[in-house]
Amino acid sequence: MPVSGTGGDPALRSRLDSLDLQSLRGEYAAQGSFLYVDDFLPGELTAQLIAAVSAVEGSVNRNYLPGHKQGGSVSRHAIDRRAPVIAELYRSSALLHWLEQLTGERLQLSPPDDPHAYALYFYTRPGDHIGWHYDTSYYAGRRYTLLLGLIDDSSCRLDYQLHTRQKAAPVVSGSLKIAPGGLVVFNGDALRHRITPSLPGETRVSLTFEYVTDPRMHPWWRLISNMKDAFAYFGFRQVFHRLLGRGE
Image 1 (cartoon, rainbow, N blue to C red):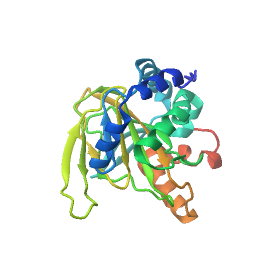
Image 2 (cartoon, helix red, strand yellow):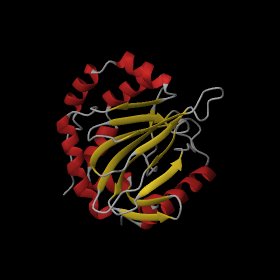
Image 3 (cartoon, one colour):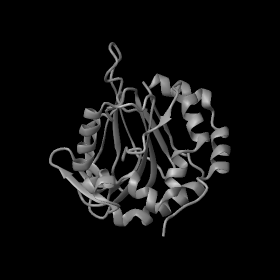
Image 4 (cartoon, rainbow, N blue to C red):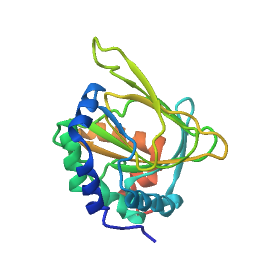
């Protein structure tokens, strides 16, 4: 049965209003478009999102790229059918407005055919990980990533490097565990990062949202992006679901 809800909007608005946005904006800028807030989502909304994890488990696509990544993924297309509460949060006007104030950008939702717009990532088997990378934008504009912690009974860590593409700025390395309800937000082209490998018996599930400053994309780059997503993340049925039917 699909897990739906209101997107937690009243509670979310209250939580966002309670945050010291001016201080967070300064921290975000000083770290080269990167910020971690360890208690971002209200508890009731975090609980709804954790319930959504169980609702989509049958749609997890396992993938393995030697030397780079191993894990499970669920795209926005499967989430729309089984856990619409995630889509409601992604489209929350309160969240989008807060992010615009934080980043100083006019942000837009990713296009409906982008499987990465919102997605769940499962680290549930020994060795699940993703190596060092940037969240490269194929769009005409910039792409911003939100990483929300949901379930973390693991030793996995988000390792990151700040200022790697800023001339004359020293690279700063960091490492953190994202608590349930915690938020990481960053410019995908600016942050070099990875998730360290999981150990036997561990479970880590995270949720990502992607927002863009310009949703236009050249058809050639769209094809490249879709093929990457099909092989490395969601499988062909989720990425090309409109051509292949509703199957997951």
